[in-house]
Image (cartoon, rainbow, N blue to C red; front, side):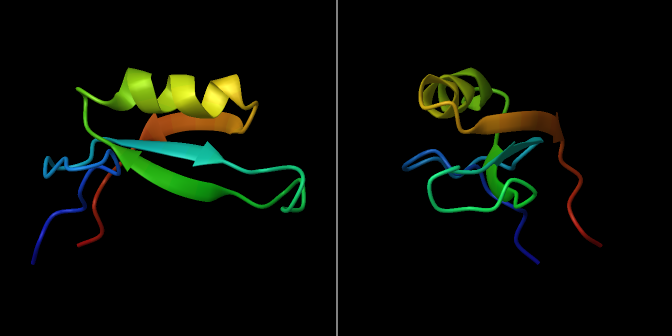
Length: 65
C-alpha cells in the first residue's frame, strides 16, 4: 500500500504531519479539512494556511494500517 503523501505540489514524500484547517467563509467552525505535510514542507504549508487565518492545528500524522 502506498504511504500517505505530502500535499505540497509535486512532493512525493511520505507525510509526517496533519495540518488541520477550515475556511470560515464556507465551513462550519467545527469542520476540519486536512492537508498532509512532510518535514520539508510543513512550515511553508503552515505559512500559506496561516496567512489566510485557515490553520487551526498541526498534529503528527500516523498512516492507517
